[in-house]
Image (cartoon, rainbow, N blue to C red; front, side, top):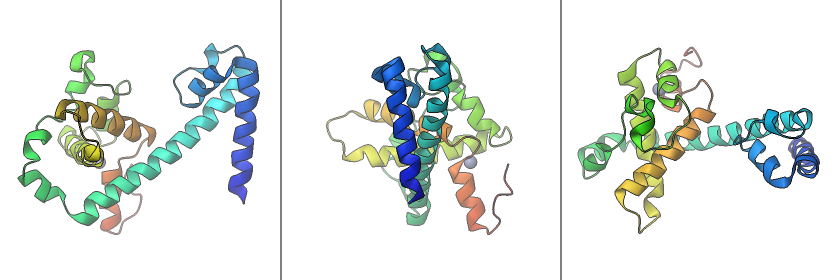
Length: 188
Ligand SMILES: [Zn+2]
């Protein structure tokens, strides 16, 4: 029942913003494309931006949780790596490559370094977890026929990086592994 009130409040906020700053801008602020400070009414746009961020992060967290549960429960990681996917996995961009602007992929700013920092600066561990998540997104997108592996990888990197970025301060693979060992939330 409370969910409806939150949704109604969010909807009201969006409509108020759409009237004042325009529907297109209100949408861009909600999905974090535009800064609320750049709009005609920052006072109104700021709460919308925050609300949008919460909605997007909650959604992204749910997606990533689902993705990782699927990966580890099916125990497909080892098998996938040994088989035909090996060629494609080699194409997963290294996190340190994503640091630079000319990698050709679309990722959030400083995504690579920030994901590594979630692993106490352990590039190897972060790269491993990054590949697990990207692999999963690749497999999800596989039903989409007619796209080359390059296009599929670009899409998977885009989705994986933005979903991970939305889960501020967390790595779903770490969380999953920690949960399996029975200690909850000791990981920073
Ligand atoms: Zn991790």
